[in-house]
Length: 184
Image 1 (tube, rainbow, N blue to C red):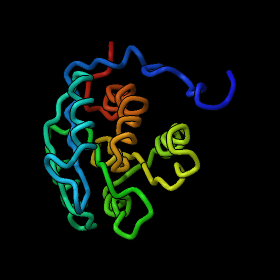
Image 2 (image 1 turned 30 degrees about the vertical axis):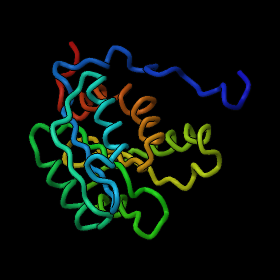
Image 3 (image 1 turned 180 degrees about the horizontal axis):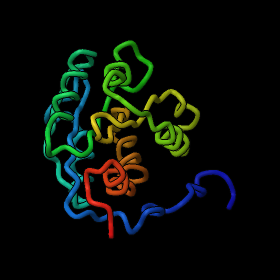
């Protein structure tokens, strides 16, 4: 296959196809980090919620905080303390602007980084935003036995991440973390 727009790699859902359904829906928390997007203005958070529900999972908690390290860390810690949260999806604050502090705010909570997520997200993003993809600090890791995703604040970016990377592997990673029973 030739390089360029048509060579996006494996189709959506490739990989752990058998692992897409769990014994129960995955419980997800959404945290939007923004000084300007809340409620009806939070299009990226809405897109994340819509895609989670469409995939058969549940949004059990949703919160909005300003671009502030203490606020982000506190809200993430509170979400991760909930028994019904298996995955935390954070949107916003992953760029290079001075107010983009999400990775720094979540660093004390992250026990294990999953560098492949950010690498794959940036690679896939080049098809949409070109060389600007390397400016993203999108990442994933494990905190308190849960999967945590840190995504940009743009709606196209979160849609790409959810459809192409997160949802196809969500049940599998939650199983691997022991929050869903392994298949027999």
